[in-house]
Image (cartoon, rainbow, N blue to C red; front, top):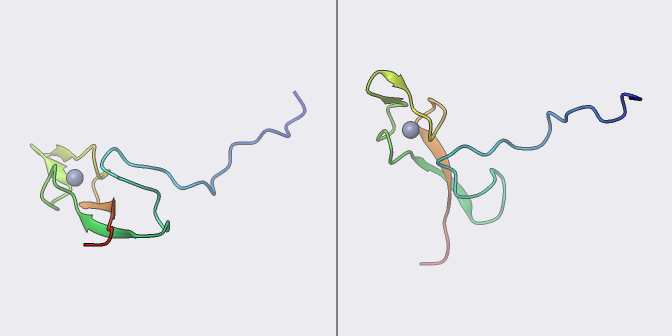
Length: 62
Ligand SMILES: [Zn+2]
């Protein structure tokens, strides 16, 4: 164990509701469909958006 393998905090964390990585092309923030943007499901933090109510979705050409 040399300590060279530290966990990186820079890699984007994908949420369950994310369709793609934040910041990638043709991505945008969208309302989480699982909780309707409230960030909660049945009084608990929505697992799809992590409680933010926002997920990253792919916005392709219409
Ligand atoms: Zn949600």
